[in-house]
View 1 (spheres, rainbow, N blue to C red):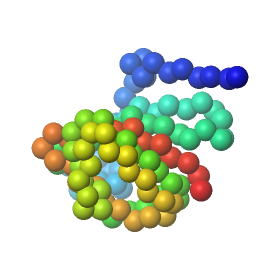
View 2 (cartoon, helix red, strand yellow; view 1 turned 90 degrees about the vertical axis):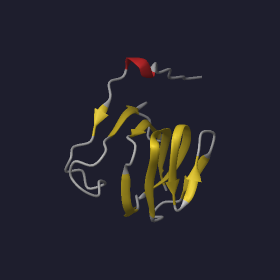
View 3 (cartoon, rainbow, N blue to C red; view 1 turned 45 degrees about the vertical axis):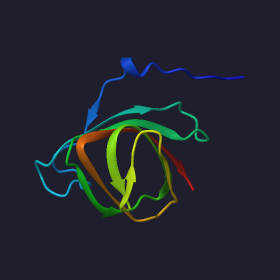
Length: 114
């Protein structure tokens, strides 16, 4: 059996640039993430994602299906409140928007090609 173990404390944070198209406007609250990759095409890509308080993403979609597992904070996805312990599944090409509250949000994001 093959196994991969990743100590996320050893991974550096990646920041999205101000010009990232997911932001509503330059200079708005930031987004950072840690990407976990195994190199296997059958294993979903995973990311630990942090959104600063007040982050907003306009309605958009991705070609892959996504899972969000909320760890800290709160955000709204499709006008639904997402709090710690909530698991969200978004089918490939589903349109959605995101808005964080005053505490921001930290969540695990898994994506898999559909």
